[in-house]
Length: 178
Image (cartoon, rainbow, N blue to C red; front, side, top):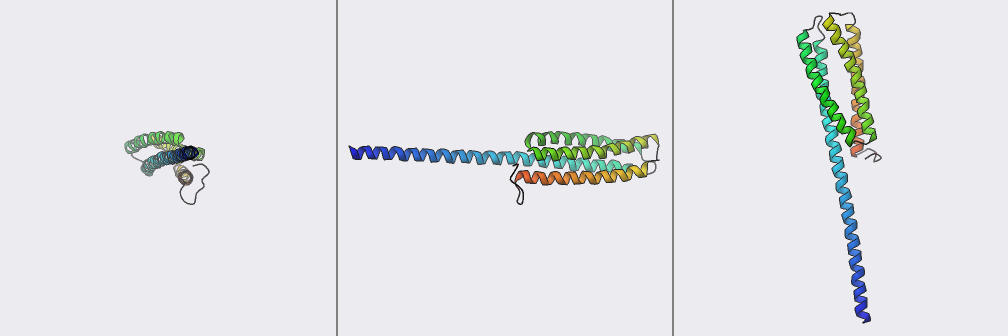
């Protein structure tokens, strides 16, 4: 009876050890899958946001280029402004997903891009209003200011890209906010 009881206890302990190991493995696998799933959603959100920014910035550049002549074609300017507005809305939608998916540093970096974008847009709006009014007095200053604000926006987008890469855990980045 002692041998049978010892065998039974040994089988129970072995079963519990196997069950515990299986549960631990299952939990680790589920955690790894969740981390990969979250990373993929963040990557998709960041890529969509950067793509929307790129498209919008090309449209903004087209507006600024259409404003360059001494007497710009206002119908062309208006058409390009309409395209810019549509693409700016797409940027806002993509930024909302970044806000939902990203860690705080990515959200902060996206907000910095939004502020820099608004500064460029404010100069562009003023340039469009002056062109519609036929006022060329501030054209050179506005063009220089637009270039300066575009540089600031470029720096903000570059910082967002770095922050997004860090959040995704690319080599050479911190694991702090993954």
